[in-house]
Length: 220
Image (cartoon, rainbow, N blue to C red; front, top):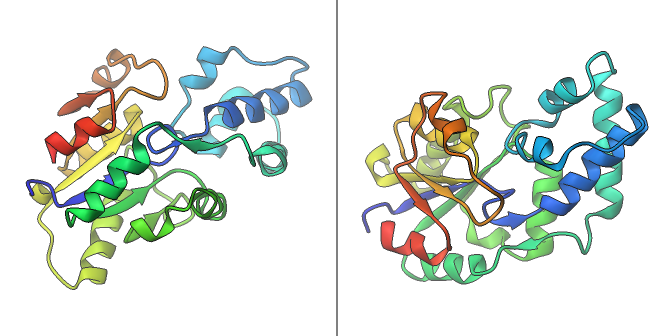
């Protein structure tokens, strides 16, 4: 195994939450602005924390109130609106069977992350979960990934080299986090259109780009 420790983003990488995220933002926008948002504009915010995006979309609005509006809609409507991307479960099962150790590093809240993970039946596949509630510093800063590696070391009771790790994600935030942490990265493009210039203009670069989950098996 070239990369025995694999760190996954969640939304847009493992889990297809595109529809419920877009619907939640449009619900919130109609409440505060009286109209829906451009879908491409919403897609460009993927990977951001909710609070950051609220301030971008709704300047001058009380952030906590808008976050609650967004989350309440999503909580009431997510069942039946989320699923694993095609091939993801098979890829995860094969990685586990071959002895890889997996973790999730997400900007989603811990409560909703664990709810979704349980609903999809994949909690037991992962050693570590880092969410936006676990650190005030978020992707693309290296802190969330560094925390995940540290927790993996504690759980497995061994030292892990960053050369043994790889970060998988669908946004500039995931690639930046891996770059800043000194870990190889994989950009996945099965979730939404990817404009790599949005990544490179920030000085980030993915080591690999894949279009299907099975391609990851060849990399690691």
